[in-house]
Amino acid sequence: MFVTMIAAKIRAYLRYRETVRELSRLTDRELDDLGLSRSEIQFVARSHAAV
Image (cartoon, rainbow, N blue to C red):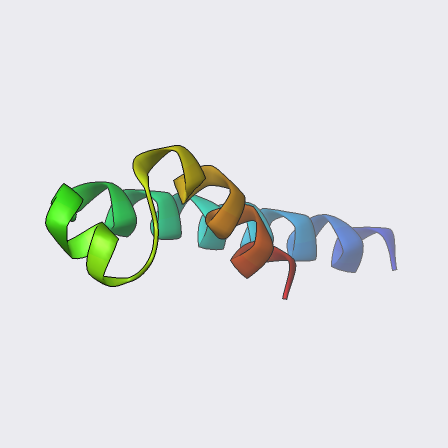
């Protein structure tokens, strides 16, 4: 059970990092088309990783 919990945390962290990386590659214009600003990237990534 403990190992499963740790594995889930690692997967969530990897999902977070991937989301940050992908959104950071977008231009400001592309982010604006999505309704996001650069300052919101980490919040969106945390929300996505928690799902």
